[in-house]
Length: 161
Image (cartoon, rainbow, N blue to C red):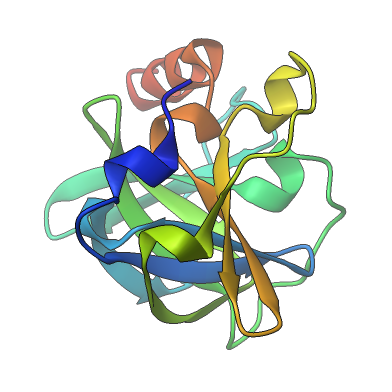
């Protein structure tokens, strides 16, 4: 895994921060296509439980993934704070349901700590580092690692069923 601190050594990096299951995560702001309020989705038969459905985004069908379901964080009722972050993962537009979007934070290299060594547990490989901002600890993540190749396959299969 590459060193996130080296990646942002020369310049501050901007991260969109969001909350899932009470924890705050950050993703590179440049990877975010759009932020939308949660809206009713069209369900797809036989899709995995974490694919809650699809939406029509200006003529493009976008699968919506609920990260609470994907990572067994319990169910959350969708309310006025529930947000969908639209991103491109493995060449596919995907909407990621999160509990709330916090803000955009700019981190200098010295504010980025290495990811905790949690062994080879695949569930934690999406964590690249930890951003320390005042009293906040933000888990910095890589989008492409949120979903496995198998998950992407499920999404693509659901889109072509």
